Each structure stands twice: as C-alpha cells, then as structure tokens.
Image (cartoon, rainbow, N blue to C red; front, side):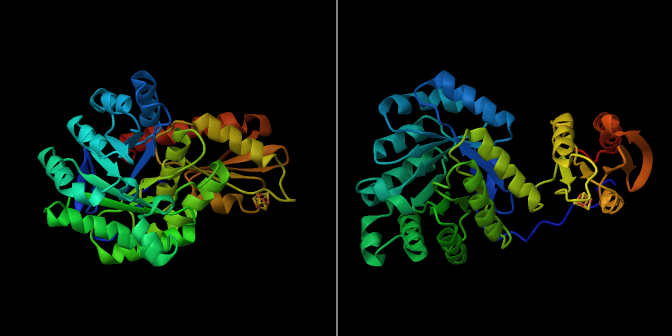
Length: 371
Ligand code: SF4
C-alpha cells in the first residue's frame, strides 16, 4: 500500500518562464501553488494578519490583499513583513498604490490595466520601480473590467479580447525590458475562460495564474473552478491557482488543494474512497464516511481509506487502498492492503479504522514516504 512511485501527474506542464513571488517560485516547472485573497479591510492590520494566519494554516501559499484606499496602502508594509506567506497587493484604479505596494515590500503586485487610467503611460515608471525592488507584476485582466478599446473592437469580452489586452500590456513592459510577469485572463464563464487561457498559453511563455471570476457560492464556484482548472491543468496550462468563492477564503484554499491533488499535481494526503451507497448497503455509508473523515482529519500522510457499504466492491476497492472497511451483517471487515485483518462489530468500525490508520501512518513516516 505504500506509494513507491509518485503518481503520474495529469499532464506535462507547459514550459514557461519562472518568477519568484517571495520564496514561492511560479512557473518554470515549479509546483502549482494555491492562493487566496483576504476579505478583511486591509487597513485593519490585526484582522488581516489573523486571516492570513488562518489561510496559512489551511495550506495557502500566496495571499492577495486589496488596496482601495491610502489607509490600506499604509498598512501594506507591516502586513508584508509579518505575514508568514508572500503578500500580493491587488491594485485597481489608482496607480499611486502600485508604487506604494512596491515600496512596502509586497512580494508582487497585481495590476488591472483595464481600470487604471492612463495605465500605458505609467508602465515605464512601474517597470522601473518593480525592477529596482525585484517585484514581479501580475497583469490581471478581467472580463468585467476589460480595456474600453478592446471592448469596442470585439463587442464583448471574448477570449481573443482578453488575450489581446493582456499581451498588449505585457508588450509595454517588455519595451522597458521588464519580463518579471505573470498573467491572468479571468472570466466568469468557464468556457470563455478556458479558451482564453489556451490562446494565451500558446502565445507567450509567461507563467499563468488561473481563476474563474465571480465563480459564485461555494457549491457552484467549486464545480466551475474544478472544471475550468481541470481542463487547463490537464493540458499543462496553469502555474498558480485561485479558486474564487463567495465563502470564507480558507474554503477556497481547501478546494484549490483538492483540485491539485485530484490531478496528481500535488501529493495526495488523506483520501477517503467511499462508495455512493445503494440498495445493497448494509450500513449508513454517508455517516460512516463522515465519521472516518473526521477521525482522520489532519493526518498528513498520503493514505487511501476505502469505506464501502457492502462486500460487493469492498475487497476490490480495499485492495487498491491502504486501508478499508466493507460492511455487512452488522459487522465491518477491516482490510489492510487488501487483506482482511479483522472483523469488528459495526459500532467499532470507526475506532478500528483510526487505530489501523495510525499504525500505517507511523510505518509510512518511518519509511520516509510521508515526507
Ligand atoms: Fe452499493 Fe456495496 Fe457498491 Fe456501496 S459498495 S455502492 S453498498 S454495491
């Protein structure tokens, strides 16, 4: 049951330049990173750092903070210094905050050229400041705030329009010999978004930040993001991801990590392989799966635990897993690496699984497989 060979990732990654967002490398073969954005007022330094700490604990690797006012800009230096993960300042409308964020030591700055007035005239200054501080820039194009000229040219935010906008802005930076760039072309429609990123990926070698904007409440947003990111990552496209949900940001991180694990772009941790249940089930599978999930929460080793409602698929699935249970007759057959190691009464299934999981985890850690 030990993972001797790392699982094969979904696809070979698209070759791209690499940038450094603080200590996190993005692009150029670096692991796909997961990011999120705080929902606090950035000027409320305590609350923002508190939320960043929660995000860090949930596995977030890069965090973005909004910067709509001077008070927010003034808070950036402290936040950037005290955050455990790199902080990106998110700038719309006001170019002066781009400079403030660079000065403040933010790990990167996201600019939305579509809504910064006379952005193109300021690229030279921005490029110079960013270069002086080795601060990468994300050119973040959004369908909802697309450059007027492109909106007029294309009539709406088509994939072509999003890509042209992004590459035009990148070309302005290139004129000043600045290439420390990553790009996003977000749209709320996964179909448009997927096409935009495909075109973008074919036309440049910048690392790409994936996102579906306004993806919606947790359920819808999770599905939209998983579908869109899955389509792109399965073609090797995407170097850092942000799941946007109308839900607490730590939820976004959980979803993002799960997407990467599902595609073998990240070592899977605990994975519960539970059956959907059916008319043959001899136990409440949902409840059992929930209890096992809760009991094993926080386990860092890549453990596959099969929870099966009956013995039809139990042994088969359990053989593929490190550990499993197949229920029947008020009892649970506990499998370890495909072998029935014991049969316990239903009431003891959860605790027995947890015990066995701990044993396997210990063994894995000794063997170094959990590192
Ligand atoms: Fe139904 Fe058994 Fe399959 Fe679960 S394992 S779905 S209960 S046949």
